[in-house]
Image 1: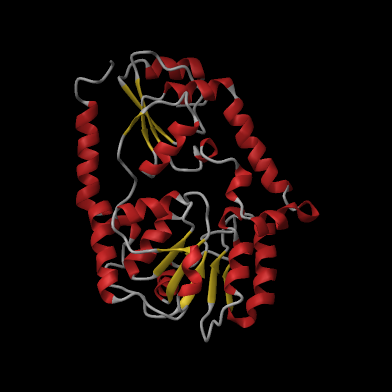
Image 2: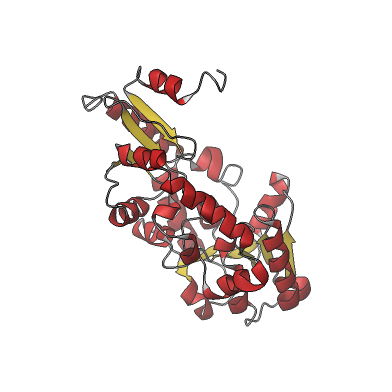
Length: 324
């Protein structure tokens, strides 16, 4: 179908033929949905996070200070104002308020959005993309951590708050361990600044991942890291966090990150950033605790669990609630 055929008028006419429309993220949609249509929004995180926290509140003091210095914040401000303009657009606000059912990544995010944005009152649906066997830990089912390196962050984005966490880690004795930092995607200027800082603080113990690696090579790197630190205030890097927990790494998150509460609520063993000083950076999670985490992850994201959620979702929308 051509772009012309997908004009808002034609799209509305197409949508009117259905009872349910599922939006996979919200950036591409600005249309008035017919009243009989049930609208389901499957959120990715990036498409709704500004409804939870403005961009500047996702940054910790040292990272924010760095970005504000020497006009380094400009690229990030452009991104922020693009999103702000998107949200202020009347069509988009109308779509958000028209959503009947919302599937965010985490239930905690549903609670945060509905408490912060009073006009948004959809029903919650529990469903996510992917599962352990086919995506999240594919090829890793029989692997476990075999080294004591430290992995920090998941991308070259400021929301990783690299400058704050590097300050903490650089004061610790790293022994023979490497500090591994994925910087292969995100903002190149920011990545360069982070790299310069880490070379000064860690010297030859710093290993930046600046390009995309063959999957087998990346798996070996993951398995070499017994400590994984994600210094995000917002929900981010969930797939990386799940993989690290499954492999048996000690995972450290900000307590304010909704992922922390979500995983704790589901029985996983993980740690807050504030607990870093209490832990030996060369220590490894015990086999017993690793198995507790694996069992919890299977209860949450196994193939069978996700298939059942998909089946329930399908059956739910085939029920009597459609078109109401």
